[in-house]
Amino acid sequence: MKKYLHKLNKAFENRARLGIMSVLMVNDSMDFNTMKEVLELTDGNLASHITALEKEGFVHVKKEFVGKKTLTTYSVTKIGMKNFNDHLDALEELLKNR
Image (cartoon, rainbow, N blue to C red; front, side):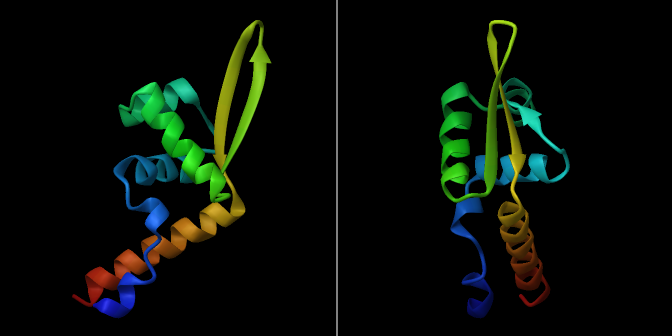
């Protein structure tokens, strides 16, 4: 079992980050408020986890103005897709070989 553990990505160990990546993997993009509602997170909690994923290069953040309001949307990057899929593959290996 130990050989599979090193393949798990620590960036996705948190429930919020796992949720963010899962949502973005099945959607082209998602805005802040929708993601907050879907994942049932607070503003600060979502923002801090998005920032951590952005620093890793896994999430792209786009800010624009719609009228006078800021619209922030998120999408998964190619490197984010690869790393998340690798993480899921490692979980599957771990479960198959337990």
